Length: 132
Image: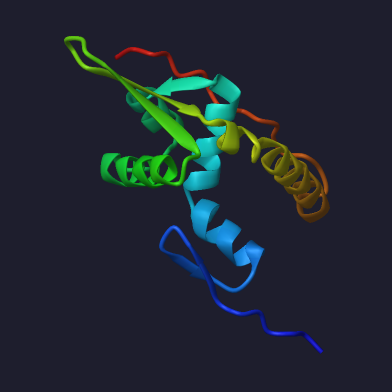
């Protein structure tokens, strides 16, 4: 029999188990992908990140980055320049997620192999130049 956990709260989030808390922080369509790209590039500007994430709107990227920053996974650095420059990078807490994402990537490769009978692609993200 599975025991039901008590409701806990941290930083305005109610949850019953740690998996639920984790999914509240990193769940969704874009957050894991944003974190993965930041782990690969170390520092990315907003425009480059948007070009890399096919299909994300400026509004959604802004929202996701603000949430990741509020959750202490991403650091936003704004430079007092004309034109303005803003860069994003992972915090130490954000970096601690990378082994999990790399394992998820390996699972995706195994899943692709099993479903398609072969690996269709590798990481084929095109290089997006920082043209801002």
